[in-house]
Amino acid sequence: MQKNPIYGIVERQRLNALLKELFRKSIHICSSFVPLFLSLAYWPIIILLILAAVVYIVSELLRAKNIYIPLISRITEIAARKRDENRFVLGPVTLVCGILLAALVLPLEYARVGIFALAFGDGLASLFGKLFGKITIPGAHGKTAAGSLTCFFAVFVSTYCCSQSCLLSLIVGFCAMIIEVLPLADFDNLIIPISIGSVYSWLLVAL
Image 1 (cartoon, rainbow, N blue to C red):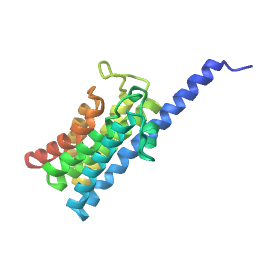
Image 2: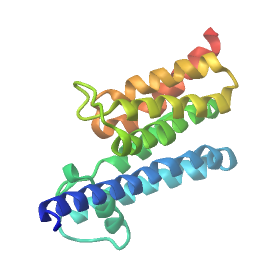
Image 3: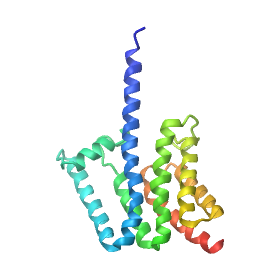
Image 4: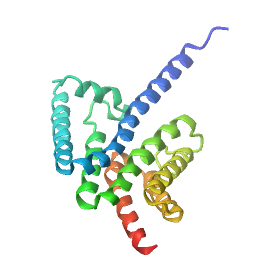
């Protein structure tokens, strides 16, 4: 029996969106290496992150004028969501700024937990939500229960690896899940590292 051509188009669009999400979230997950690099060469890495943000912003401003920077503009187009088409793609800027904020404000041992929460919690939540999410959360702009639970478990595991405390990791994981489920668009990249790193530091004193 011949397949409905519309069904084929929908499936291709779904696969394309999934591949974009996989590519975008792989960048998130790769940011988990930043704390290691910071521990080896703090200020050079901070400067490189600032330069990366500046270069990206310039690239996006030029792309808006149909001036394309090799590689950078292409990567942006591949990773861009449908909602980001024909506009400045803000996600990479908030990602770098969130990491920078946590690294500059918090001691590295606390910033590490916040950056891991962004890398693994937020990174895997969206991916698993698209793959397995059937139940959407009301008022969360399409976010799913599967994605939120993934965020919780990912942050629990990454925090436990840093703290060796089950209770502390449970609380941090729960806080990360609450922040992740909020309809913050790309600004969760900015909020998660500093918030979770701060919560972790407060819990270390309280517990």
